[in-house]
Each structure stands twice: as structure tokens, then as C-alpha cells.
Length: 165
Image (cartoon, rainbow, N blue to C red; front, side, top):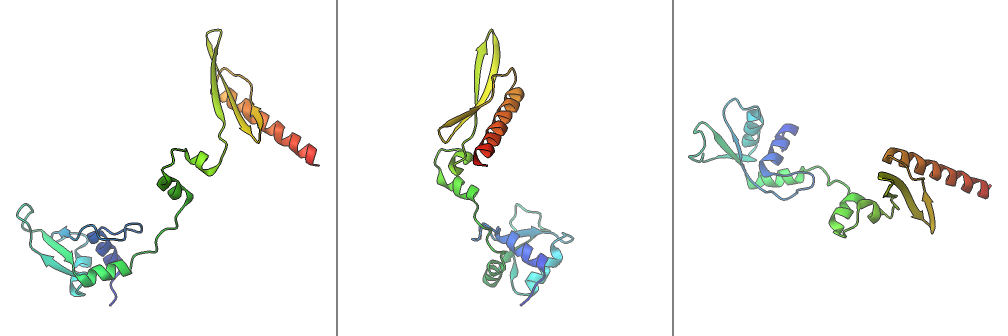
């Protein structure tokens, strides 16, 4: 049995199925004559994948409630797209470890230090990496502190190149 791609999409919507939710969470689609999905619903009904159900009193009595048959549920599940590949971010979300994503990945994030000198706030960005501190100079703004830190990183990288070569 073959139905259109849009009809399969309507089946998935009716059952609440998605790439990552592969168990049905509902089984109804309410539409009236003229609804933009009515051709797909009627196609599914003709294929025996959906049936019309009783319209509850709280709905407009012109509404039609469609429900998937057992064959329709099976067909919808068989025609789900493949599950998305799990990412490191997904793993971090399920780890529930209390660490930031960067910490969980093992990335040494720089720290923004703040101090008040002479009534003015100053900022300095630094990071300890492999027992060596890399830091910029104290600056009046975070942007200036960031520029100083980037210059320190660049100088450190150039120094490392010279010692290797």
C-alpha cells in the first residue's frame, strides 16, 4: 500500500509522532469540509489507515474526527524518518552533571576578573592552561580586556612557534 508523502505527514501528526518521539501520544485529527488536509485524510480513509469517529458535543457538529486504525499506526511508525544521530550536546543534557557544556567538553574557559581601583571598575580576562596562566591586562571595559587577552593569546602562540622551530 502506498499513500502520498503528505498523507504520511498527516498520519504522523495525528499520532503525535516525530523523528525523536516514536511512540504515539494521541490519536485524533479534527477537520471540517474544506480543511486543507481533507484530501489527505480522505486518501488515508480510503486506504483503511484512518476511520471517522464520533464528534464530541463540545465540538462544532460539522467537525469530523479522524482516528488511525491499527494498520494506520503500524504504517505511520514504519514510515518514520530515521532517528537523528545523538550529539555531544544531547549527551551533556542527559548527563545532569552540574558542569557547563564547555566544562563537560573539557574546554578551559577564560575567566573575567573584576576589581575596583580608585572608584572605577576594571576587568581582566585570564585562563590557566597546562599550569601556565595566560592573561590580558586590566582594562576599563570588558571589550578592552578581551582585546588584551586575545593579544596575550596571540603572543603566546607566536612564542610557542618560535620554540618549536
